[in-house]
Amino acid sequence: MLSPQADGSGRRLGLDDYSEDFGRHFWRSGPDGFWKLERQQSFQEPGVESWEAFRKGHWDESLALIEGQRGHYGKYFRRIAGSGFALHRVRCVEEPISPYLQWELHLLHLKAQFGEDTRVLGRDGILRYEAQRPLPEIVVLGSSVMYEVLYDDDGKLAGGIRFDDPRTISRWQKAIREMHRAGEPLDDFFARRVARLPPPAVTEKPG
Image (tube, rainbow, N blue to C red; front, side, top):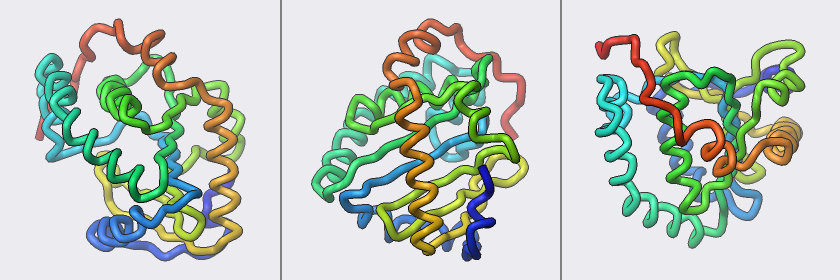
C-alpha cells in the first residue's frame, strides 16, 4: 500500500499545530467516526504515568495506574457517545510482542471495556498491505480530515501531515475498515496472547 502522500499533497504540521488541529476536529468526527491505524511496535509516551512506571520496570504499578484510569475513560467515552461518533482502531501486532506493545495492549483493553472498537491485525494480515513499504500511522476523522501521524527516531510524537482531499480520505478509510474486518477482536486476542504474559523485560533505561 502506498503512502498517503502519493495520493496528493498534504500539509505538514509541527507538534503544537498538529495537536491543536486534531483536538479541534476530533469532536466533529460525526457518524463516519474515528478510524486509527497503528503500525509501529514501539513508541514513547513521556508524561503518561503508567508508561513512565513501565519504563522504569515497575510493571505492577504500571498496571495499577492503568486500572486507575477507569473513571477518566468512563467520562471520556460518555462524552464521545454524546457527540455522536465512535472510535475504531486497527492495532498491528508482530510476535513476539514488544515490551511497549504489551503495555499498550493493557491500556487498549481497558478502553475497549468502555466502547473503543479495536481489532488486532497479525503478521499475515499486515503483509497483505506491505508489498511496497511499511504501513504508515493514520488517523481518519469523519469524512473530511485525515492525518499521517509522525514520530521522531526515538518514537516520540513529532506532528502530522493533514490531508483534506476526499479521494485520499475515502481510500484510506476504506482500507482501514477492511483491515478492521479482517482483524481479531481485541478481547479475544488479549485473553489468548497477552493476559498471561510475564512482566516485560525493559532493556532501555529512562533518560
